[in-house]
Image (cartoon, rainbow, N blue to C red; front, top):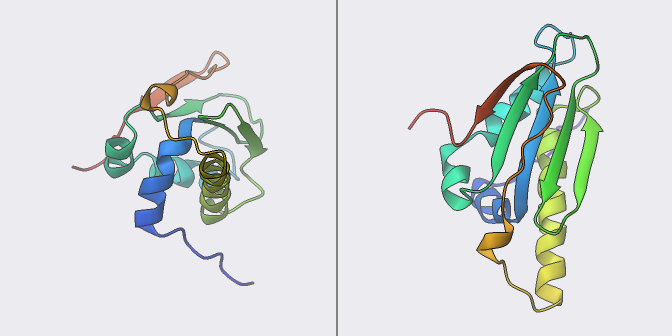
Amino acid sequence: MQKAPRVPRALARELIQYAKSLNITVNYWHPKATSGMEFFRQMNSPKLYKKNPKFEVNINYVETMEEPTLVAEFIDGTKWETETSNFQAVELRNTFYQFTAKIEDDMEESGGAIDSSSAGSTKGDSKGAVKGTAKGGGKK
């Protein structure tokens, strides 16, 4: 199986401007929770937070053994919802950045620019679970 190419860091830091929020719902003990939790770790970066301080990353821990899911929202109002267990973390990351790249292309074609006030944040529903919210966490 061929490994998916990684999105270069410099490109990721530019494309994060088009993201609004990322909410991952997972049971820590679910056997297929690894990719969603790793994707959360990758997106919970101080460097990404510096580029878009309004980008909010949430992980919602649930006690039920439901499939791990993610919901990503972008500044143009589009959403990406998927179960994470069918993907590796690098595939989730690549798909996330494909969405942001499309938004960037659409904005360039229409002659628009990023309005920093439009990159707001929303909070996801934790479904009665313990909720962990991170804003640019990690090592500094």
